[in-house]
Each structure stands twice: as C-alpha cells, then as structure tokens.
Image 1 (spheres, one colour):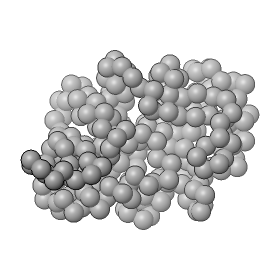
Image 2: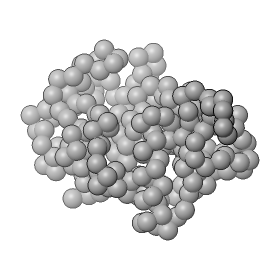
Image 3: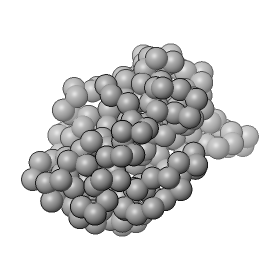
Image 4: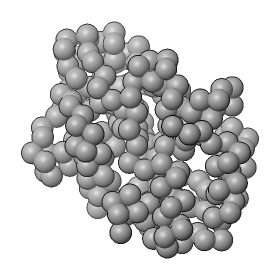
Length: 219
C-alpha cells in the first residue's frame, strides 16, 4: 500500500472521508464528503501530524513557524509541528490567530510563536474549498511582520473548479497570492485508492469519476 493509499484509508477509518450522497455548501451534489472535525483522539492527531510532516519533508519546505488558522487549523499546526520534531528532528514554532484581537494582558492577534521579520511560515489547513481562509489570514500575517510564506499544506486537494472560476482553490492561491499549496492527497488519489481496493466505496466509483469529470480541473 502506498503512503497516499495509507492516508486515504486513515481518513475513512477516522470517519473523516465518507461516501454517499451529499449536498455541499456550494450546492453541488457530491458522492463524497470530508469532515476533518472527526479527528477526535490523540492517537489520530499524532498519526495525522506524521502525514503533514512527511508532506513538508518530501517537498523540501522550510519554516520557522507553522501557522494554523483558527479554529480547525489550530490542532493541525500543533500536531504537524510535533511530528516534524519527533520524526525528523526539525524544530519549528507554531501559532494561530485570534478571531478577535485581545485588548488586555499581552494583547495581540496571535497565540504561540511570535512572528518576526524574515520568518518563514507554512500555513497548515485541512481542505481548501474556496480559499476564503487564506484570503482572511494573509493580511494578518503580513501585517504582523515581514514574513515569507513558503507554502500551504492541506490534507486533500479536491481539484475542483470554483463556482465563479475555472480555477481550483489551489490554482487561485498561486495566481492571486503567489502561495504554493501542497496536499497530502488529491481527489485522484482517493479514486485510485477505491480502484485498488485500499478503501471501500467501489459502488461509488462511477459517481466519483462523473463528479470529477463535471467539476474537476487538471494541473
């Protein structure tokens, strides 16, 4: 089993990746759904962190700090930072933003590592659907310090065009902000994992391919 198949299997075992008939926020009818809120145990987060760390290492990404957008990105940045150190001996800071700036005590918009001029930052997210989170956090990050975004790492690239564009969220991130996005797996990897028998869902394979043909983009 390949590392990508292992991750797809891990998502299904955690109940994060499910197959069926779903209506997405976009209004599209999809045969699969991803809910990263279903990572609920320390063991699951430890394993998830390793997959993030592997992706960072495989793509030669360098960072002084891993940033996780509140709220879902907070545990993701923490587990990725831990795994980078435990598995590869790479020490990074981690931080996350506040939804509202703190006006007492130390104040500020961030919790965790303090961003400094020249810092290299990797943004850690779950699934990038519209790119809204990136648009919201980039001004916060660049206002805090003169930093360099060396990449953004997500779990799944849906490789799906936006409602108002023929580009995917990943492509738009590069075009609009110059941010390279790296995913642990793509929708193509999920389809391949079904085909190989690494995960159940053969009965949804035709629907997965049809959805991909209708809404997908190619890189």
